[in-house]
Structures are given as structure tokens and as C-alpha cells.
Amino acid sequence: MTLTVRVIAPDKTVWDSEAEEVILPSTTGQLGILTGHAPLLTALDTGVMRVRPQKDWVAIALMGGFAEVEENEVTILVNGAEKADDIDKEAARKAYDEAESLLQKSENGNLQEQIKAKQALKRARARLQATGGLV
Image (cartoon, rainbow, N blue to C red; front, side, top):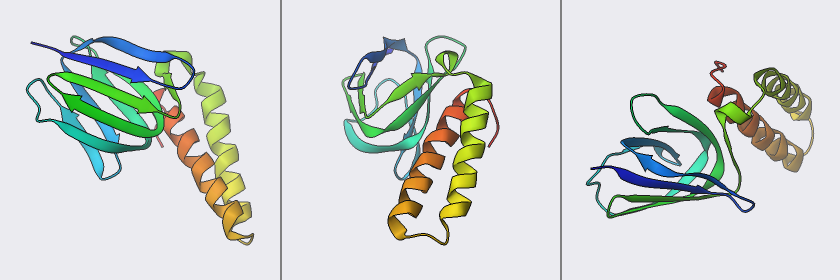
């Protein structure tokens, strides 16, 4: 028995396929989903989702949202998502370095600038981690 997994962003469906297992970046930590999981509705943090269609894992960078698990169907509604294969690793590394620099510069700025810089760093980290770049 398998799970039906759908990752839906506002502009496209990023993933719609069967899977053996899913690991989600929930707001309270990593959450593993297998067949027969109890019904669940959870908020998702910006981070990396891992899905295992067969024996190899596929990484997808998620930009926050919600996940619903019910009757072996996992529906994930997110603000944005990218499969690791679609992310340029060097560009992701550069964006991470720039976001880290921006955060350091914003430490003496106002609170709103700091929040924006932290969110940009979180998104850049998720994209880099999805490509296999360690952060």
C-alpha cells in the first residue's frame, strides 16, 4: 500500500504521485508519514520535505503552508515549492550567502528589516539544503 502525495503551490502542482514515505518540515519539527497514518492537519515551516516514491528520496524545498493526511492521501498546500532537481546549487549557495550577509547588516536596523532578513535566510537555507548543500 502506498500514499498519494500532492504538493500544490499557488502557481503549479509540484508533486502528484504515489510514495512509500514522506518527511515534512512541520512547525514543531520533522514529521514522518507512512501508510495508515492517523488523520492529521498540521502547519508547515519553511524547510525541506523528503518523499520516497520507491527506494530513492526526492527533496522538495517548501516555503511554508499546511499539510493534511487522511486515508493514505497527503495533500500539501504551500506558498511556494521547488524540487531539488530544479534548483541551481551554485545560485542557491550564492543566495544563501547574500541572505546571511543581509541578516548581519540588519541586526542594527529596525525590527521589520530583521524579520524580512530572517525569512529570506530561511528560504535560501531550504533551497540550498534541498540541493544537498549542507547548511
